[in-house]
Image (cartoon, rainbow, N blue to C red; front, top):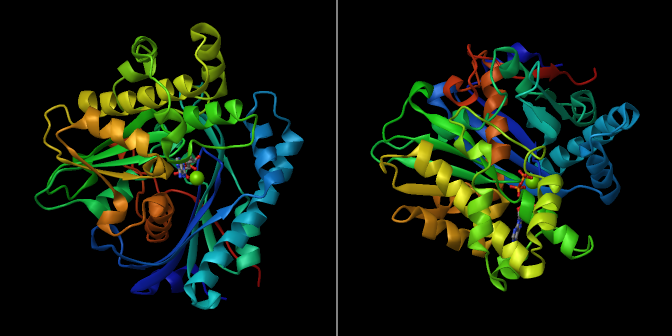
Length: 390
Ligand SMILES: Nc1ncnc2c1ncn2[C@@H]1O[C@H](COP(=O)(O)OP(=O)(O)O)[C@@H](O)[C@H]1O
Ligand SMILES: [Mg+2]
């Protein structure tokens, strides 16, 4: 069997990255070749695939998101998801045409079922059993990245900033790396950023989470998202309610900060619907404007108050919502808002790529957190390792 020392001794490594975000829509999988580590990291994307979650498993995950979730379900779904993550890894390897025996490492984020950074003590829980992934793929797997940062006093999120720095920092151009998943987050990369000390990153608030929840409700569960933003485009946003929602405490809190479904999920939506009476396309339009405005507010207030960062590179599923993107362009002008696709990394693949990079950093004994982003008091080597069966 290949030992971790064997893998770490190679000049370049072939790594799978697996991400299942708060939307629980599917497993984003990538296969990359990574040369070097830390500041010398060079990455080549070999394949990318989104592997939809089986309906039954998705329903199980949504059970776990409920406050009254049962530990038996947690236990069972952790293993079931591990098997699906293994399939997703094998599928993306198959897609690339390389032999799975040539793949060195898997970095798997897992599915967040709780994220309680303000709890006492702060805690977070990502599931998707890594032992299942390692056994079924035959590939060493690093998973469960967030607790190490929390143990070091951080929020455990966001963790993508180090990968943003290593992959996207530009010599003379300041960049905002914006990811719109269920939750939206940003990494601010000043021109010439070359170490994690100079960068700021934090969660901005809702990404697609509220829009998805509203579409699910309005379509009686038949649709999961507002395809292309077309429903929202057919309604009218209620400015007054957008401004009221903008008074939420989260937007005032300075970074470091992170959030999740607990703050911007179905309960938030239910309360808004009761209080505002908004329905249908107008509700969606209002939620979409609120999402765009809260993203922009976080950027203008905290990430780029001086307007030095002229490029906004958007990743995550939100990039496919044209109505949301148009509103963002409006709110962030004169900055240029563009899909990460145009920078050579598919917008849907960034977070999966990031966890491949973070697994590579962990293998090499390097901190994967950006202390300014998570608030940790120390650099944390992230994740836990599961080895394949012999
Ligand atoms: N064609 C589309 N039109 C509008 N929204 C889309 C489209 N495709 C994906 N999305 C949105 O992107 C979300 C998934 O984004 P993703 O980056 O995977 O989020 P997460 O990391 O939370 O899983 C979907 O839930 C949906 O809201
Ligand atoms: Mg997703």
